[in-house]
Length: 107
Image (cartoon, helix red, strand yellow):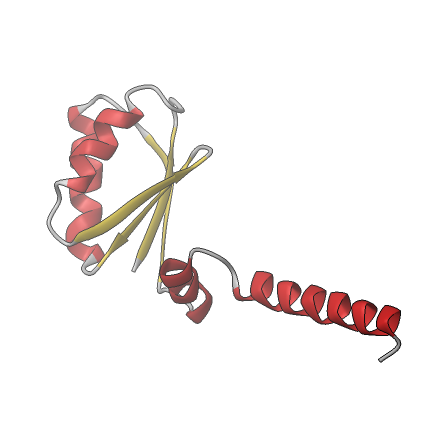
């Protein structure tokens, strides 16, 4: 399950909050991209209340929070580090490059 949230106060004390979230049982990984904090967990119903509690302990306020089930794209990205579309684009570029080389060689 994927929990995404951002803070009212932006990045103030964000590192301390991330450190505490990483200690929560059932949290597999925490990622930060700009102001969005994404938590990957196996039991969001246990993790979400603890995220709120840790933010209260650190006197931080959560602006918004969303919960979603991972898609196949999310799973692929978590294992490979890139989007499936990126891989398809690279394959197209490689085929085009190979075609141009063969054309130059007269094949």
